[in-house]
Length: 181
Image (cartoon, rainbow, N blue to C red; front, side, top):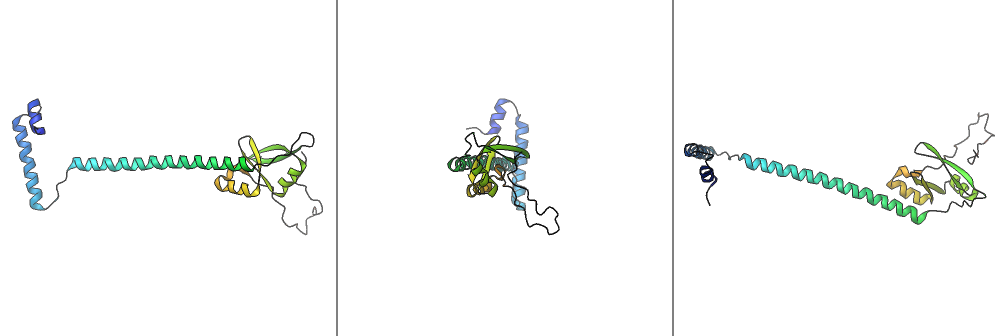
């Protein structure tokens, strides 16, 4: 097989004088590099190595993105499974429904529940979990597990009032949690 120099000569891209001059310069560079003890720098090899390193970095980044997306999908599936297996009935049968108001994503929402379920909600034994416009009731333990994965899906229970101030003129008038609107 002919060398690249021979192929270029046959194709007429390089004349013989220029080819001899280039080979002579290359031999001089090799001789100088050997005598001075410096390693000969091959720019093509360096460029190829740099391109290989850049490709590896880009591949690692894409792989990390894919892995993060798969992790998010797995977490969403876990949350869905927790909700489906542990959702509690709202107890709303149409006749004795009570509207329970709560805040979700900075908006006031309401669901209709029975009075017994409303007591569980105000006591904090049941919590509301939702995404978008779909809400389900789950026990506090399950809601805590869901909050570990995605805290934005769990509606926080109403805060219990702390100690009453001695000088409070309205101390005798308690505000009920189940106020009807």
